[in-house]
Image (tube, rainbow, N blue to C red):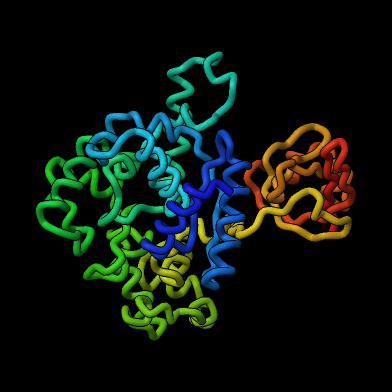
Length: 368
């Protein structure tokens, strides 16, 4: 244990009541992981406090830290600390942080320079825009960089939204967007459904329901015997049953919308403030690093897929060596290629089959 560094980090943890530490997966990540593990164990023995750490991708962090945007966000902080802030924010909200970096700097492959750069940029920016619009953006907390990827909003309008927010305080409703300089009716029509207001005047502002469908949404909840307060308090658990009893076609006809639009509205009203990322795999919160010597055949562990090859998948299970799940051990059915069953970044449960300390090899299986 490096005593001086350990003491300094302990003091920071106690001072700021830290519960989770975000660790970048770059140079010396494994050594840092071992250091953190030992430190966390000491703190638990001394105080009983539970602390976890999560390994996150640090791709593009150095690019961001030296960028003009980072300089504007943190003018009085040096470059290395800006990078550390970026790594921490990737655990809080990875999408909001990664949009600040040119997509080409986030590890899209070693052959990216061999393709037409204009088409690559267009394709990558399109993917980012799709991701941002699918997730939705909190209008009162989103940065200029994040807002600029919302449909109908360019960099200039995004800047005007942030300036309006700083001058007038939080947005109370989506209609207030029309007061933003250069944001006209057409832009409002395009962007409104992707922007969320969590504690606004209208509960529908915290859903993906577009303002042009608010009237239909209100008629819908009234016909089904609900109120806006029920939506706000998430009390629409039996809405599917009520809708079925009333009749989808009948209610769609009465509120003058199509059935697909009706079902979309119902889906949104069931969970205001819904974030589709809640359905994704959760990151692995670790508090200890196993040594290879601690692994025993039969152990069931959680790991993250780090690489997928023709012959199998390499899985990080928290030791200094990734384990290999041979393609014959990925599924009970025939596996033509591992990529058909697993992808990089996926969290999986694995069983230890064999540990070869001499050759530093770990054989794993996903057939549990």
